Structure formats: structure tokens, C-alpha cells
Image 1 (cartoon, one colour):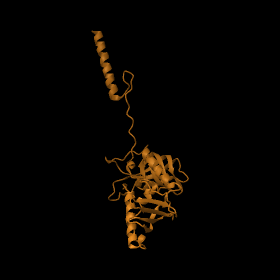
Image 2 (cartoon, helix red, strand yellow; image 1 turned 45 degrees about the vertical axis):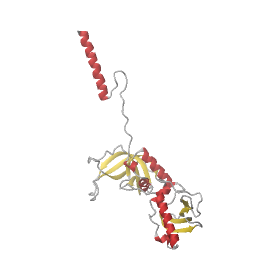
Image 3 (tube, one colour; image 1 turned 90 degrees about the vertical axis):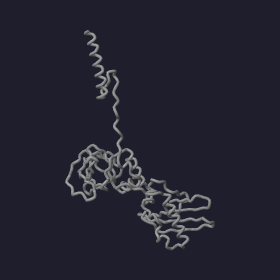
Image 4 (tube, one colour; image 1 turned 45 degrees about the horizontal axis):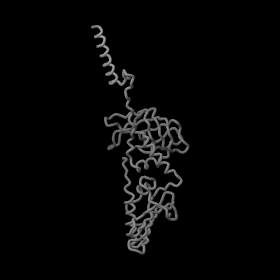
Length: 294
């Protein structure tokens, strides 16, 4: 009887040990280890931003850093603007983990002010130890302080977002980067010898007075082709910029949707009409510049 009771207690103890291991994730009695779930990958709301959203924010910012917040101190703020969601203002201190852009660099620890929206439950998100990407402006005379370039210029970090930001910032700083387009200077159309044949050149204005032109070529029996030339001479090897590149962004996001009347004021009626058709073709070929930031 005593042996039976001892065996029973041993079996019950073994069962309890197995159940305890399953519930609390401790090593099992057979020496195996309970599986430990890896933390989910970090996702940033900005991962869903379009190319234009990211470029709008980070191309214009003179300082772009990745930083981990070490302190978050609530500070008084003015009343919220009617129509805007309630925000909580914080004085944030963070350690810089990567400098993506910044002439002269930044100190290893920086601070800034940010307005943070409550989450869906009305609670303030936990900020300490969070990794952030910042698009910022320097504060004159105070190198350790930054000023956000926009209300949403502090975004949660993710590897995918940092990769996109680095690629876009690098393309904007490249020696051969296309300049910012400021408008359309004029257009010129040259009809061909055959019906449906012709070439249109559209000359753009830029922020650095660098010549940029769009060239549209129509040939009977061939697909209409267009390209962008950066320079005084039309480059025969020039091509249309691929979508979600800096060249595409400079055009698709800043050109007017319709060719201005002033650009064709000196052309004949037929040449002006052909220029408008070719310009509309280019706008359609580029596709819409989608922006989703508020």
C-alpha cells in the first residue's frame, strides 16, 4: 500500500510539473525548453507613407537622426486648437544612435519639444526607450537642442523606414540630383512630315536655374516616348524617371496638372494644342503624386 501511494504521488508530481511548465514556460521535466515567442517586429505608422510623404518631410530637413528616448517630461502647453485632437506636450531627451543628415554633426545626446497624441484608449504612449526618426532644424547657439521640422516629424523607428529615409536623403544630396522644379517656362512643338508625327519640348524652371526639359516624341506605328534632360543640350540617351525616385518626385509632385496658357502663348493654335496633348500624356504616364500625411 505504501509503495502504491508513493507511486501515485510521483505520478501526480510529474503531472503538476508538466502543467506548470506549459503554463509558465519553465523547462520541462524531460530537459527540453519551452518555446519563447520572439518579440514582434517594430512597425512604424510612417511605413505606410507614400514616397512623396517621406520625401516632403525628410528632404527639406537639415538634420535627420535616429535617436532613443531616455527621458520624457510633460510640460505645460497652450490650449489645443479647435478641430485638432488633444495633444500632450513633452520635453524629450534622447541618445543619438545614427546621424543620417546634419552638417557638422550633432552631440551624442539631444533634446526637443514634441506634441504627442493619446492612443485609441486615451492614454499617452510610452515614450522612454522608444527609438525615433527625427526630421529637425538646428537651434542657433544651442547645438544639443533640436526643433522638429513639422508636427509629425518625430516618427517611430523601423528598419524599413530608416532604409527608405536614407535612400531618399542620399539621392537628394547626390552631385547629379535633379533640381527642384518651380514651374514651366515655355513649350515648343515641331510637327513631323507624316500624320501623327511630332516632337514637343517643355522647358521647366528650377530653384537653381539649371535647365531641365521634358521631351515627347511621337512616331507613326510606335509608342509615344518621353524623357527628361538635365542640361542645355537634349540628351539622346535620356529616359523617363521611374516612379518613386527623386526625378519622378520632382516632376509628378510639383508640376501643374495642365500646361499653363502662358507656356504656349507664342505658338500657333495647332502647335499649342499638340503641346497640351503631349503634356497631358506625360502627366498621365507619371501617375498621381499621392500624399497621405495630414
